[in-house]
Image (cartoon, rainbow, N blue to C red; front, side, top):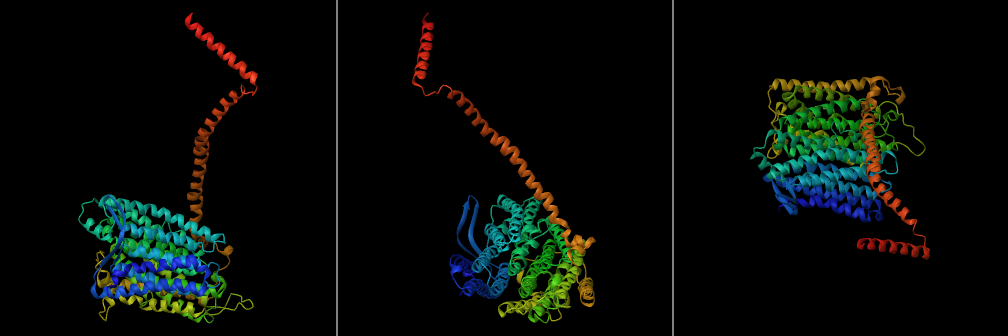
Length: 635
């Protein structure tokens, strides 16, 4: 059986789950609606895996077009899906990690108001995300792009009765619209210059065209503007930390493993465009490096366990953009995959902690949880070791490859990435020690005893921990490939994506840089170990944070700067336009006409007395005047 012909069902299953839970989920028992949502995602994963097995046997890419969608002149867009190495990797990550998070949510969201609504939103997100990664044209990708933005707004604002969650949802929605404006310009430029949005046709058109480099630069740059919004890069990253207002599984699914990687996927998919715009690629790499470094510094002083992970996500996304910016597209996708494993694990682990502590998120009020939450602790440790770049863990292989390729292309970018790696190790072990070691600072109340999460939550943690440990072995660099396994991941993606980074340094330099990278992770670990484990130092209250630490704690006051400049400036402009254009000009013209008519009518009302003899007198006077006028004509 040719499973690839059924690729549309991967997208259809979550849509069915959304419809069922959206229409009748509130009438069903909690477990039933949760299982419907979880199984919809699981069925998509199973079918994706079957297509993956089939593809590995044939390495044959294919497209399945269901029907015409938009036909306008030369523009022809279909509802169609493609099966190739890149789309399969993305679909496996989305459906695999997504299914684990769905099952985890059954336990985490137990008893919450709007349980079925939550799973309906999750399934709608899966439907949108799968359209994004499986669609065979830019318009279908953009449909999924906007769909995940909508779902992000709905899920971030899930706790709509609180004040901050709806505001965070609106912030995410508006910031993404700014990026999407640039993304649309990029799509319009592609249509104007190449006349097609189908990826296969576009690739052939780009390779066979003589379009100037300036046009390619602007296409690539405008598409990247969209990516800065969706994938939280400077200057449009500000929505992601606030998105932690949503339920923790939402943070794991949308803001760690899937949605925020859309920009990286888009650039990898259109790698044939970016290689013809080297200046745009350099901008991508520099922005990625600055974002990785900037977000890592902020993560050093955050006290909210989810905020630390949020800024860590922004920083790790910066690494992915470093990779695609220096032409290491495969390395970027590789880190996208490994990051999905360990960051989803870390977010779900933090959710297990928050669940056990009855929604406490401040690490200053935690501590000593290692014995209370053993499964959560050990799995969280695996995720921490992976993100810190510990040798043989998944994050080590993908991050090291990015830094190696960056060194060969741009030493400045490599330096920022290396500094971010040091800080990542420090703040992640800081989080680990403050949360799980030392004395317990959370006060148990009555029957609210701290205990391990149920199996429905810990089993997904265990699976993600295993993937965080072994997930990197499909991309072993040749310099340490003593078993001659080869870089299976790079070979698998080669028909669709291949790296164009020019390697100028030798093997000895590569080994030296690898040792240096490991040393950074070790230094970060021992720094956190000495301060937060050995000395058992616990950060003080917000008022006790002073100096540059306060700047970092307040995230460089970027949100305040945007509030005073962009937001207040926009509101001021709106008020000015309202007063001058709306009230003075538009209302003035309309009200002026009304005033003119009213003035004339008031004058006319004087002769409208309602008395018959007055009207008779007026008629006699009128007839007399008319008669006199006629007589003057004949005299």
